[in-house]
Length: 284
Image (cartoon, rainbow, N blue to C red; front, side, top):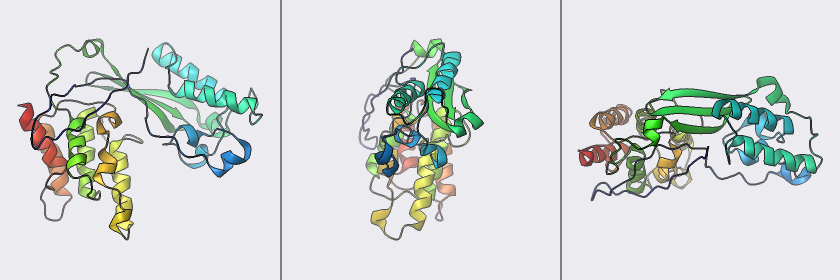
């Protein structure tokens, strides 16, 4: 089984319709790796935080151990029938092998928190397939959308339609320099729910990033220190674990979430709700 990655284009929906390619693909986290920490510089160990940027707390500082990797390989095999090329198990195995060669960990060693809290794979059914999430010590290290056979074959897909991910990218392009506000985070969360069919924020997902940015911006003293919509919504299509064509009801739900969280109860011009509304009209 291969994990396909998808490219995304900026879509200026306010001025023209660009023929877009709808996707239903498996996805792993694609955030850049963290810079090497001072601890890594001392012993050369590859730690969880170095290879999985979404990992935090004590686990992020732990060297990847061989038995952690072996357990994840077993979990992936049970879920997928084989290990995923470039997936968490392969990443962990590569890091653990290097750590063992450097004498940082022993061949039969497991990370204490991983041994205590476990390594697991869970799945959630969504329209068109299932979302599979891989965890180490309760923290998500990988997520994939595995399409059903009919969806994977592309049956009935209209490739001219604009997707929610593309509409979000358009908002990031049109209003990219504006700081993320709580109303934006609410709109992005509503859009993610409509795209994935899952209630609540996905760990490390687009809505979680938007909420984190809005919370940080509320405390930032200067605008230059605030995260912008462009920061959060760039490559939005790739950050969503599932996507769908924008429909009128999707746009209405997003608009309700955005206006409900603004004092003047109006949508931001060129913002998330406006982009979704334009995409819904164009899709008709």
